[in-house]
Length: 186
Image 1 (cartoon, rainbow, N blue to C red):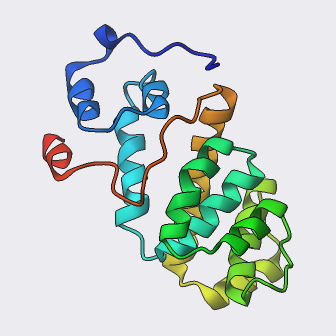
Image 2 (image 1 turned 45 degrees about the horizontal axis):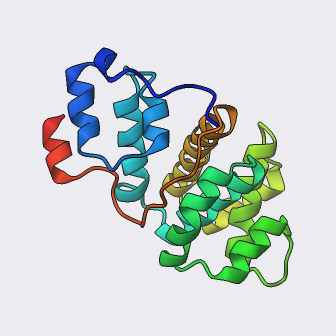
């Protein structure tokens, strides 16, 4: 059971209500609406994770699944299992992430490095130099920063879900969280 009740729609400003009305009903968005000053920005940042990264979708999903595993967030994992499949992450790779077998020979060198990098960021504030050197060989500088942002976003998202016991009720496909109509409303 969620630790907070749904926000009172009567205290949500009209512009925020209008923005949120274009989104599918979602328990996480409702929970985030308690912070009326940041919910739009949080949702817009989620959209950017899908529409504005140089990082390939498959790589993004590997990172998100890894964050979900190491942050122990079933909400994020449940949301992203089907998205990761659509992005090309096979079941064996998802199982390896879930088992935390970071050195599995079944992973490509690229996947192993990216997954280890994401896991290390969740576990520790710093990553070892040797791992960072490996990351520099597989990602551009832009992609490195994007991975850091994806990890930070989904760690934060995961903590809202775990600390507030947000129930998983809807699983989205790999599609933007905002429509063109919602973008114009900004």
